[in-house]
Amino acid sequence: MTDAWNPELNERFKQERAQPAQDLIALVQARPGMRVVDLGCGTGEVTAELHAHLHAASTVGIDWSRAMLEQAKPRAAKGLRFADDDIASFAPDEPLDLVYSNAALQWVENHPALLARIHGWLAEGGQIAIQVPCADRHPTHTVAGELGEKYGTGSLYHGGRRVLSAEAYAEQLFKLGLREQRVFTRIYGHLLPDIDALVTFFSSTLLNPYKAALGDERFEAFLHDYRAGLVRHMGESKPLFFPMARTLMWARL
Image (cartoon, rainbow, N blue to C red):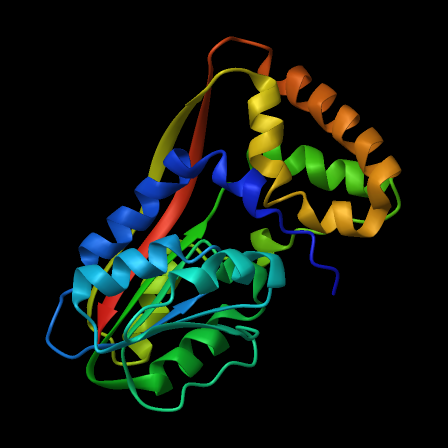
């Protein structure tokens, strides 16, 4: 798999992406000596904040992107480390007190099976705290899928069929015995300078698979058509309001 993740581009919108991570951390119930994993840690900034907030005994952040891990590894500290691993095949070395994941599991198949795996990692009283985007009906996502057909790649973002409804997540967690839970969808309103900022916002996440598949020259053409498609649906207001839907879930065993 080609690593198209760009940490610098991702960091441009750190403030817009920080609030869901903060809200997710706020759901966690701290207790002494926690053992924690962050699935899809990215640049590690949130992982380090989570580790410090919980005064955790051990925290490991995993990600498959070497570019992201290069940014994350200097944040390593006592009890905090980062590792190159794939969420789809990861397994912890010991029972965990918290499995945390902010905006990463939309890239992983079969969420009912994934939640069952995560449940199996938990120690008694263990918690999960997960956030996934669910904006697939917004033009930012539908236009990308349409252009994938035009450019011969097909739709390369499958979050729409992977990510469940909030109700379905609650049901899955209940079936797994996680009956103390909070699951909800929240709209995060982002006020961006213009439509170009929105294109840049998604160039570091949603559009990465297209960049990897198309190469630089064709991806530039793709971005031009993507911008035009967003303008058709959203106009070119300045500033531009972008409502981003995300589902947050917390549960305790």
